[in-house]
Image (cartoon, rainbow, N blue to C red):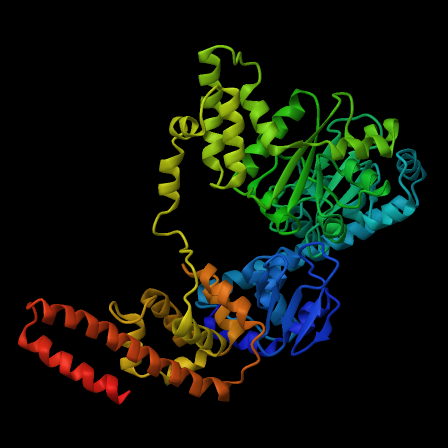
Length: 594
């Protein structure tokens, strides 16, 4: 609900070169700046930033957008969060559309800021306790962890006792400190009451190694605690708070971002200790889910960082269940340019224990031989089924139906279809019919879906590119020109022109601001392809104005000649009335005039 005028103003004040330059080393390359793309691994720079257009585009992986889009992709933040971060950097205050929304947003911001401060202070306390607790240090050293890795992940220790953290915050001297500590999940409220009927509070984490959980910005949003020896539960996590949702976050992602892009894949495990131990051994691209099954939010967040995900699961029954859940969650997001693989270790091992017993080389071999998603899917639907019998083959197809329906049509799904067809003595067409895949395609092609079409060519493309580059040129179009561009019977791609002009009228400030709104359009893919071409265009507004006028004049002639041909056919067939004969003479006069 942020006003569109504010977003336009923000993008006119923010310099995309400064924003991207904090993360990417940029060098001059003609009118634009070049660098190595932060979104995929490359040796030669294909990442281009235009200072004049305030837009970036990677000719390698296709990533593109404004400063807002860059922060969303690079930092993994939401659209609103990216706007707020940019506004804060240049001292702008983000307004809201309504007073009630503004009040709600301010209240949320105050709560989050309060919790962030509490979590940061608690993290510092736990780290200090680790340095002075010999047993905790010995435990980590016994697991093979160095001080460098402990510092990288800001590991800490929650000492034994009921009120250590509460005492550090002075919660019993300052009653106002109790609420933020409770809201952050650091304190628990006892069912028993203390003196004079006051409730008693105690520390959630006690006698545990503390693993701070950081969001993609590096802010501490939660904690995981592991017992030193025996005890239940073995791991204890922060509860859901205004800062922390375990279904949305991945442990170690903040620390692993650079390594993920350098290595070209992310390694997903199930535990905190797996992450820090594997990082210690050179697998810096490792993350973990937070005591929960893999979620769509996890997959989307990971695929923003890399095109390849490798899951590591125990080989026992629980590990297989977790892998199957991860498979189901991944299917709507896998594509022909995305790779998902599954690593199953022996039932007695997790990644940490396997590496310590078998060695790094053995683990590397396991990673390299991880099972492709396609094979795991086929194994899952045919497991414990007698494929020699018709009933067994039908059962396998039945089990595969919801999985195949979840996938987008493409080369990968086709290969899986072929594999299943071979296993069940069928054809691909048989499987498509049994699994009702044809109707799924029709349902996915609903009107609400974005329209992907080939970009126009010739004069239409010229006009579109000029309006995209300089949206303020829409003001130069008179009513007849707009009618010709947008109405049925005018130029080709009238619906595309109508959509673009609507956005140009609403967001006329600049190329970057306009691009933010076009990304949500039904024609986003067409616009993206045209924007890619515009990146190399160094035309000025002064040069664009007469070029647009000339192109509109030529398009008008094309439109008139098209109408003329229709009238000629009607006149020659004897179907034209007097009005049509008169219109034909008018057209002849206008064409010769133009």
